[in-house]
Image: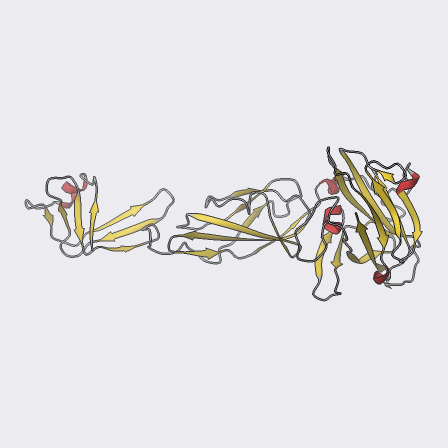
Length: 348
């Protein structure tokens, strides 16, 4: 193998080339790149010689070793750790993820949210190999992050990072704590019934986390969500309420929808409301509240962006969909101990 190394004139005196333009001993040149990768270039016993009529050096019998030789090996190390800062980030607030890898020219991130593949701003939409990355999670819940770093010789993958993102705007909500407390987390089931069709430890403070899915594997669809979402909230305390926050944008779609207490969920009677206040079951609009609704598949609360006969929503406004069991002493159906299950469908 012959390699021409251009413009290494400064090496000539150091290598003491003979009058014939030859260094007749084996030579190793160690190169380090700005990315902290390295490449060792080792000649055979003939060493280096000048190319006649130029300032270039020629080497024969060259061997290459190291991560920076363009074919000298995949990045290292495999199963490298990912480090978040802070360790418990907040939804809507940027955080950083750091790692240490040598020899990578690109790194591709992947993420899952509550067990479903998802996109994550700053993580899944960039490929730069530079650490750290600034990441923003729009929704609270359980995330798993992975990173695959590559060069022309191969790739390596990080150890998965399991990360719980805390409620953002929900965390700063002013919500009543008496006579009932706000529920914040539950497993959510989808048809067919568990054990397989489950998203675990779902943040109940954000509407999108609950009715933004129709299965345990789909990506989130923000409010007004997909039509026909029918999640089963597996454990809601008898003396708790759900206040699931959602936002109506500046130019909301011309749609309407309704909620129903689904019969196959076999849960207790419900009180529900839509209000600008967390945990408010007595909103000023009488069309925005329904009480003591059984699990019979009938529509229990209708909403619209234009029709005042329904619960009328305004643009550029945050709302809560509030849910509680009508009787805090209920014994069923779907109850065990101090909690019950409930299945609430959303159709639009």
